[in-house]
Amino acid sequence: MRQKPFILLIFLIIIGFTTCGIDEYFYLPQIPQGSVSASGVTIMLPYLSSTEFYYASSYIIYYKIYLSNFLKEGLIETDAFSDISSNLVNDWNNLVRFLDITRIDVPSRSDFANRGYYELQFNNNNLLSIPGVTSTNRNMEIIFHATAPAEILIDNASEGKIQRNNNLELSPNPDFLSTPELRSNEDAGTGSIHNRDISPSSTDPTGTANYAYVSMYILTLGSNPTNFVPILSKPTHIGVFLLQPYL
Image 1: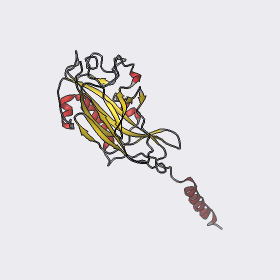
Image 2: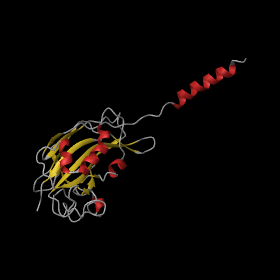
Image 3: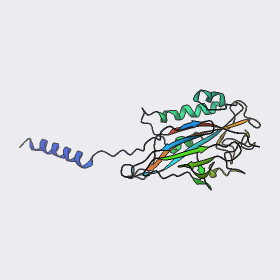
């Protein structure tokens, strides 16, 4: 008789494990590194099974513009970041931990917002939202033209211009064109209602900088089906690109 309470306790513990279970972990796959050139990038957006990744919704791109008086033409590698801008280096060092496939760190939207990164827009100011659940891999290409707005192509078909985030009350031009207004150090940063997505030159934050660069990260976006909280994949750094001086 004295063993019955002990046996009952063991039984209740077993029932607890089998009924409660362990909370399911929802994750989204990291997008493979793209093929980068001086004027753009080509990225394969991977097929996402509607059964396995039914909670995926879209792909998003975060960007930030950096002003500089240093000219780096051609393909821009990480060893050139310090020549371009110490602000670029600081942001890279803060975000690079999320890129490491050997770590479980996954960013939130605030991790990018806190570094002054904004969500890219395209085609009449709609947030970049490419269906995440597809039946096949898709090819995405971003091209930075020298004398025309940058554009985005999906499966080799143009989807329109890529544009800076319209929540910035951008004036007068939201395109990624390196105009004198865009390169104004005085108008860059958190003190401006228009150019908060721009980091002033780290060597001489006065007047008009000679050059502007853009850094971009791409992620898969979804929603946790148990609590509807947004979830992100590990990011992929698209690259850093020189915006050719315009006007």
